[in-house]
Image (cartoon, rainbow, N blue to C red):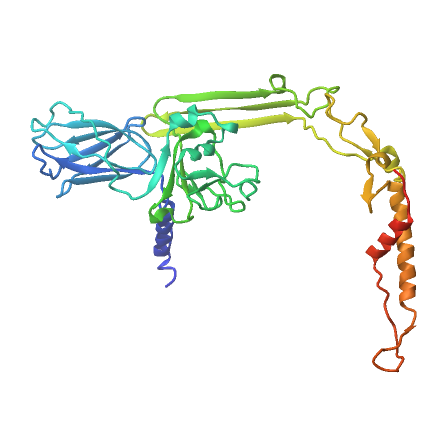
Length: 425
């Protein structure tokens, strides 16, 4: 019984995987209505959409209300061809962005079936097919705008409502780029790469960061997106990679930063060579057709090589302190060039670390004598406080015996020690 239902179970599992994979998609949709010159709908019109890069063709027919819809289209350049019996053929190029619902209403003119094509200019109407609010960062912006370290995620700050992570927050100290959208946390954003979940489960940021030359474009949704993007409450970053086409295309790049072209580190010692810093970021991409109009390929590579010398200013123990002798109290001081530091790298603590205690200037050697005197005074007061003291109560003739603690404490002992100790500067 179980074996007879096993094929059906396999089909259900495959169908659920397919629905999950297409829940958060980067593909777009082209839909619209076909009209005649009197603005009456045309039923049965044939709509053909062709990808100009791969010659992939999709077709559909307008229904009884004149509507047509073609979905699951990769972002790219397309040509729409609409034809109906008794009307001229209409051809028009369109550009489909990532996750875009593009509306194209075709107005056909009366004429022969194979008449001349009519190009129309589409007005910039409001978006009618989706309530989501977002911005598409196009390929020209990705490749043309300067980026620190070629991290294209920094372009997300061009989107309204996006701000850098707060200084000191968890996202800002992880060594990578983080941002917040509309007051949400920086780890509440969701990242997709060609429709695949691309989030680091440990840091809750993007998992894979592709090269700039490998990205076609990306969209960042910030508000009122549909339920397919309901995994995180923040922004939805939908990245689309380049793909192969019938034409062979590629790129190569090399970015060099060398310390020979940089200014000298202010804190670097003047009598030592300039710290070494060489950073190379290089790579390339290539795409084309394995079989024309059928099979395509695209590959990219990016590498980073950095050699860096770090300058630090810190205190180190002296030779006597390394040998275990701390009696002199000598201390290593940071030495800065150009006369901005102390005249000597080693200065005696006995000369520099003097304090004002009780109105007197006490040297480090006096600190030890002061502490010893205070401890002796404190012990004497403790012994005195344990001595039984007899006193007569004014209300009676009884003479009880009690152990009375002297009004003595360690601060009082220090005060007495200071009065009895005279330490010159």
